[in-house]
Image 1 (tube, helix red, strand yellow):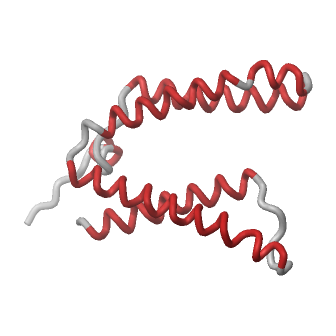
Image 2 (image 1 turned 180 degrees about the vertical axis):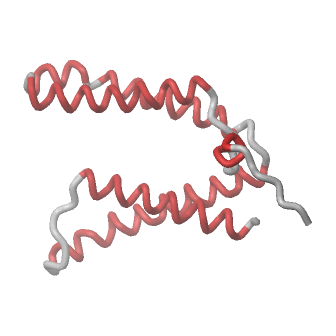
Length: 137
């Protein structure tokens, strides 16, 4: 049995298809707006930061809108995989939110910062996606 070599486009789209150009554009704008906002906060001060705060919020909203639109184009099995990954992420964050004060009072962990939440979200989404994809293979 001959194995065919998959192209790089097939390898990128194994998880339900490639994102639309609008989704990529809004994701890049969102990342740039967050980076610029952080730079402004550190260099120009809190007043300029507050004036520019709506920019990443608007970019993030449009990014989410295009993610949802793109997800409507994929097949039902991929939608189920993404839904299970999202559910695992939400439940994991719910447990983290409930259990963190208990562990903090016990002195086992320190205060929760934004980077810790970002890492937790990334790990939960990744693990949820791969477990769901493995179940439905």
